[in-house]
Image 1 (cartoon, rainbow, N blue to C red):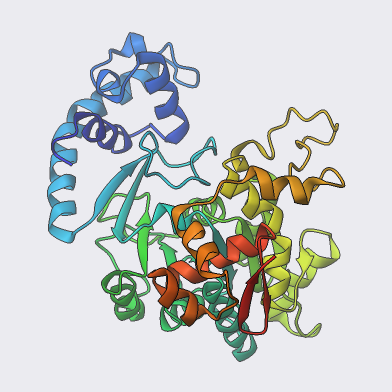
Image 2: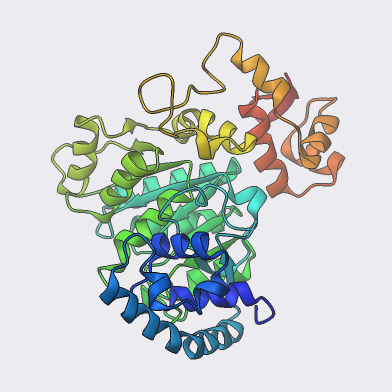
Length: 398
């Protein structure tokens, strides 16, 4: 990381008071690079929309001090095994990248696998939840992870912890987006869980916050937008009124164009009142089984596979409703066309070759030489593309 001047310059910008993701992007776009932005004058700063004369002077002063702060931050990153990923690098999460308020820099600890983790689904809910909520969070996470989806959540106690834990236990992939810096552990009781996520190679701890940032209430709404941005859709397991999970759902639906899926519960339970409000107001689709989630996200996953997810909700649609026509469902022959248009990855070609005769996941692994995790993830995409179908535990070519 020390050998990348542009990444170091972006780190300086993120540590500068008065600069957030939107202003940093405007600066880099206008000046041509983060390195040039770090040496700009107050007069240069005033040319950026949203920066007045007083703010320009304050930012310029903070920029001077940012070099030493960034040097210390990099040293701590190396000590903790944390990597930095820039929004201007191809390894940045595909679904998050197009969002205008996406972090320009992410701190990551663990294994982020771009090919697998682009098919994420968020599981969220209250910290103060019922046994029912914990059971359902575990059930949905375990099954969806087993189908090859990456489970995204916030690392908090309650619903989040149950989702991460069940995913790791099932051998699936998970992303924990924390509301503190990665040098901190919050909640403290999740230290072993976070260590398992990293040590197992099954996922990643992620934050946009400087390493030593403590957990604070104002951090969590921003954290929630990242959870939504990393996901094809958000599953609300159990949320009381005022729950942070409802903020995630609101951002997902209104700002990111994501699917919101809501699990019902007892109508007289305060712990589910926020979820029921979502359903009554038409803010989410009712789901009762993990299969409902996969069905609801089918079109979203196809867009992610095709690389068109970033434009799916661009507000230039000729349909008049602010959306582009769904490339996979807009016409009567769209499903057949999608099968022809979507290219196969090397792993998918190996699975198709292995399925010249029907087989189970274990048999496909033996024939193809792929790992169980790879096979499950790619089978999910092949099912979505209608190239493969399943009967019980046996898969066959369509």
